[in-house]
Length: 324
Image 1 (cartoon, rainbow, N blue to C red):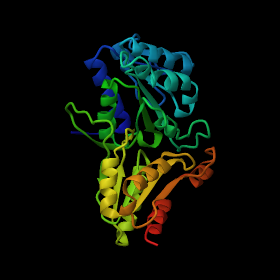
Image 2: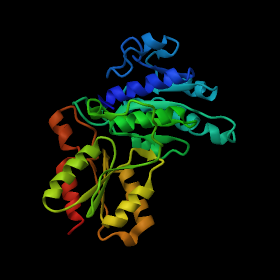
Image 3: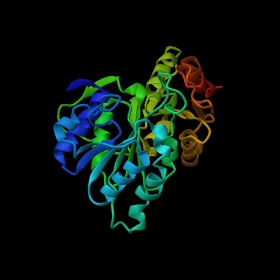
């Protein structure tokens, strides 16, 4: 067992899967010589060569389309988009080709592609480098979407994504890259579509994912001082989503708060609340609450950035509201 950063856990997953399967390759802007702006692919070009770690021109639509084609042809490409905001550029390749090809060809073609993208607020990098657009892809049949928060989960889920025969979107919160955690020395994978209970509790369920799980844990610790025991569920996968674990928790606590860093309007938080109501309305002792960002572009100014982003106090207030 080693204690490493989430950034290092991604590098480990990439290195191990490339060594295991020669069909796995990486492509994107600055992934090779520079080793990614966050240092994730540093050294991999030297280790595996320029044919398997490919620096591409600055055209997300072009190199994502190339990746989709390579996946259909039998390769296992790992496409990196520097920031999730720029997923708008290859949207057609992802939504209309990668997601639909297997269905349209009656299962005779697979698209085993993984598209990685840093997402989320933090660092004052403004409106085109700070979005939470994971919600868009949860809407698309044929895709899988993961958003792990710990080094252990990131490595295990990313390895599963690389081996999956379906297109997988992997969202990595920029604030999580430097967070450390325990990762086993040996081989392991984590199944896509299985949530994790980060903290057990009895009075209220807090459902969150990615960086917001840490904020939820901090809120739960504060509420514990006042005698309110919160169970914190880390979804890890957004599509498929583990409603069994969520509903088991709601059945126990009878109250639920769903947290996302995305703007609330049209976010996955509303979808989760709707599903909870459909599956277990009679289990609830209070209306479910949602916590998310303001419906506003993310400001360059870090003070304004923080103002529109969910905080520990927002989650605490939402939990308390379920007891009114």
